[in-house]
Amino acid sequence: MAKLLGKRRLPYIDARTEKWNQYEEYITSQGFAIYQVRGDGNCLFRAIAHQMDQDETLYATYRKLAVDYMRSHPYQFKFNLRTEQDGTFDEYLKKMERNREWGGHFEIFALSEALNVQIWLFQESFSVLKIGGPEYEEDDNLINS
Image (tube, rainbow, N blue to C red; front, top):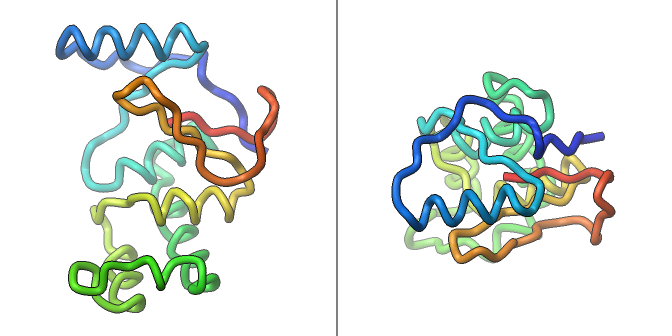
């Protein structure tokens, strides 16, 4: 079961703009915190590893989990690929297996399903996109990114 870690802080992210300050204020007013993970192309998987295991260095485990889930559930993904950009489904999965390849919506959904958690994406527009799972209660399986 994932733990709600939104009130624990890691090293602080530098304030960049007034908009960033407003965004951070909004996040903290909701009871969450912003965590800094290394931005090396593995940042999605690092963020998930941080929330699940409190250790972003385990990112490769979550990359593999996402790809394995997509490979075993192709009907949930392959018809939504942009083949001119992503190639075939198999080519896409091979690309996603590579270190430093950016993860996106497919990978977030795959991780949500594989881990049986709902992932909340706090967007710059101050809205929250909830991916996967039913509406969870506050202490249930919830990952905040």
